[in-house]
Length: 165
Image 1 (cartoon, helix red, strand yellow):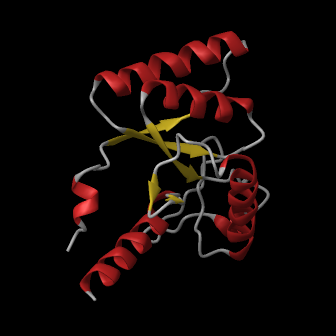
Image 2 (image 1 turned 120 degrees about the vertical axis):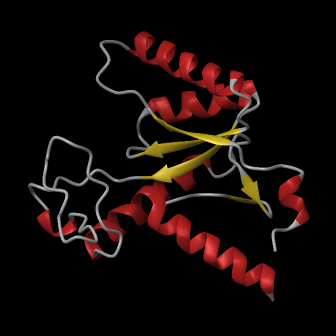
């Protein structure tokens, strides 16, 4: 059973990746503003932001801009691990195929110890800087965080078990 608290503040969200590869910080800020405005205009209440580098000043800007628009943020931690340097983190699909193309962002398999270590570092660094930021979506006073889809499924099962007790 879903708690009644959720219905007063449902998660209506869009995934967002901080833009990279743009020529200037001004261009990047414009792109963030444009995307967040579109999310707000679509009546979403939150954004799930893919984060791979917390030292990126775009993270702080995005959190502040989201707050100014009344959007809340769920950080989705996605450490970048080169599959050329660390082929052991490749995702293995149900059919046995793997994510072998190094041109694409590889999120890796969170069951891999190296990837878990890098993810813990990323989460720790993020929380050290932003744990009290008012733009973060919170449940029971704690910021909601995600580790792509695998961990989200674990969170949903945990919530179901908790609510069924």
